Figure 1 (tube, protein in one colour):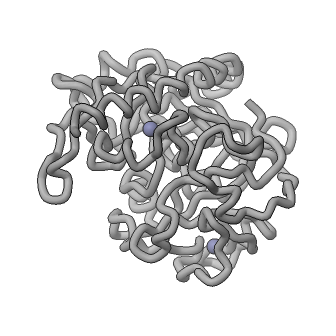
Figure 2 (spheres, rainbow, N blue to C red):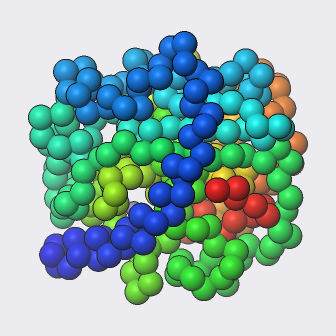
Figure 3 (cartoon, rainbow, N blue to C red):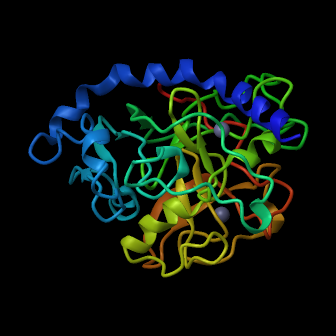
Length: 314
Ligand SMILES: [Zn+2]
Ligand SMILES: [Zn+2]
């Protein structure tokens, strides 16, 4: 059985490679940060062999005209404006330990098979630097979908409203967010056994990605002073990232730390309301977002399948 799940994993993620290459076309923005970190995208392998990459020492460049939400909650990324849109760029290297860095890398750690991970086995891929870039529309337009279990069917290519494969968003730590779908004939649950302790894995181009809740983005929130715990389900606030259409990915809390109203969630744990932080600042009016909270909202445990807003720019 282990052999089969490994095989399905390789197949499942093989479709992601093509869409990732499209990310690299828009790297013209990276020259705006030349004063501090221009070499960070090219030296990933040689430098990090001696120093562990962390949310504390990663390169972060957020322009001063970028909205406060991004200033407060992201690290290890470059963020700038393009008109009214927010452009987030990242090399996708996780600023935490992972088996998938490979032995000899400073961020390498052994694959954990303790406790409920005893049936886990890694896939053969290794983390490689990427050229992620997503552009968040300033005013996303709803597709007016009814996101019910008929639409959220957990199968790829059954609806034109699914997120594309590959990178569809970025986590607070610059790591890629994938949707919740596996390749045809497979289901996401078969991928779980290859997740490292951060509940992530790389596909065959080395694009390391999250499909669900993870301590990785919570470590950014801890670094920025918003939580003491980095355990999913236990943090003071739980934000994971943002998707290309403007959908936000939260955990077991709203942005102010309150528990979400579970009675109004759709089939992928999404709902619409103002996104207000602990200081009472409203960052997004009536914004669709999803809550990944495995212990509480048990019907759906992953990043969303269906794209609520009308466009993903790249
Ligand atoms: Zn995956
Ligand atoms: Zn909510």
